[in-house]
Image 1 (cartoon, rainbow, N blue to C red):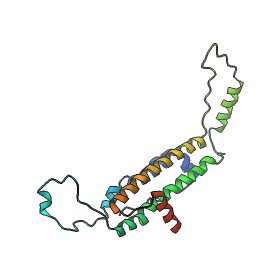
Image 2: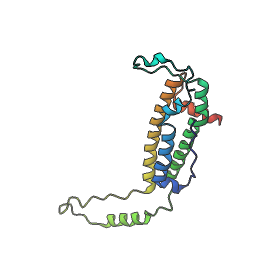
Image 3: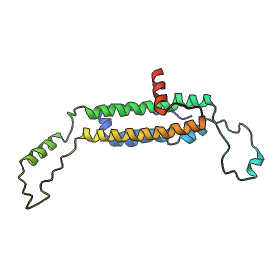
Image 4: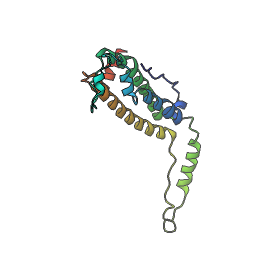
Length: 190
């Protein structure tokens, strides 16, 4: 059985480092649990439980045999692997969203942005001579960039969880709750 994703050290520097956040943490966590959900669920089946049937190779089967997973195995997988991984990713996304909405006294570009903004306000623009001279695109603060990244990653997380939960419901059966509801119910028990 797969292991849940380990929690990274949460610091504002971690959030602002997009390589560490997206590639090293989110992408790896999603690939080991959610992207490979079919393999993880197949690993829950006991191999050769029914034994080999030579007749199974005599004709081509267009659909695979119904391979439902015992509910106890599914519940254990959800409790020990899936939900803890989702919890770690949710905690990271919540923390980084909080960093994105907080003031950033360590922003290395803040002085440069202030200088550029003051120059843009002082500039005299004659749009008859150059119609494009009136354009000014202020640099985006890194907290604004992080906030946009967090919105995008939350949307990606929602899609991934819906897909994963759909496959679990298909293979395990008996799932009547939505992914978010089941996850929140699990979180309340922790």
